Length: 186
Image 1 (cartoon, helix red, strand yellow):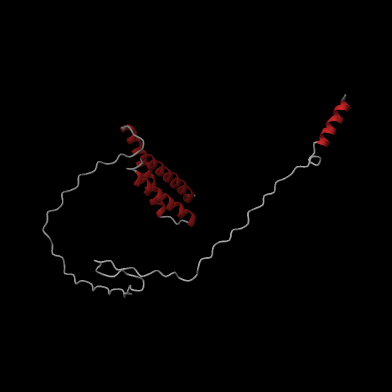
Image 2: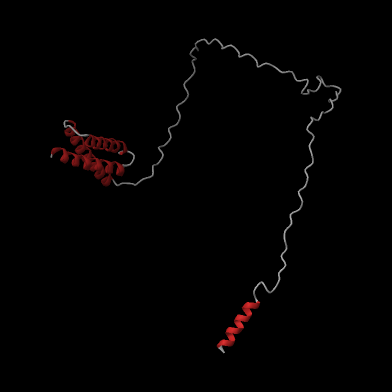
């Protein structure tokens, strides 16, 4: 039974190949190219426009349009000093209410705590920078001192805008300053 199935499969596969059954293929033949009409290369002349009764001027044609030179630049006007005018000052613009800023809302205790931490860190940084000013620093240490000073200035600027960022900057400046002091004093 196994051999008969194998033979049947073999026979079917042999007769099902594309070689046994001729297929006719349709071949696409493109249409012949169309010849484009020739455009004359000489200029086409148009008849002169006719005058209509009541026209004050004859119609302009390219031949009748005169070529004009560009007009000369007008001379600069002589300016006298302006006399002060006595007009009433405009009324002051109404003050715009301050636009609300997005950010965290702090309780008074939180705000006091953040300001205390900020002041404490900035105080440490100021003292450290005073000590470092009297020391001879190599180029790497000078760069660290400049970074500390930059963080200090940024923390002072951010105090009113973003208190958390100001505290973080001051804390970073404090850590860098303490680290640099320990390296310089060794």
